[in-house]
Image 1 (cartoon, helix red, strand yellow):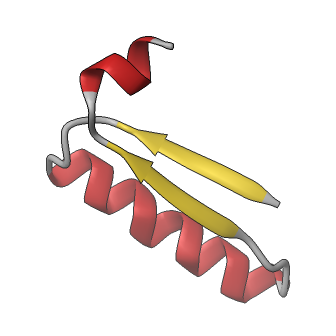
Image 2 (cartoon, rainbow, N blue to C red):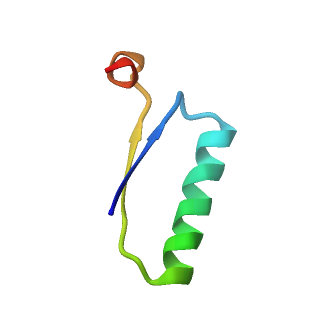
Image 3 (cartoon, helix red, strand yellow):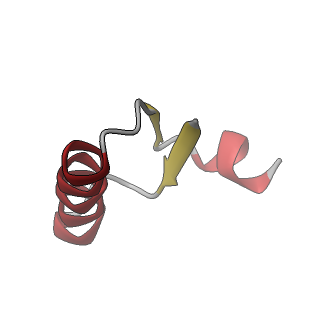
Length: 44
């Protein structure tokens, strides 16, 4: 499963990353997390 976290890298973005990691570990699902902080990439 691929998950993209879109944002400037603020505290909320980091919290989302931790939640995703915890949920992945709890369910045993392997995920690929990509953090995108470039606003031009986000706008695409």
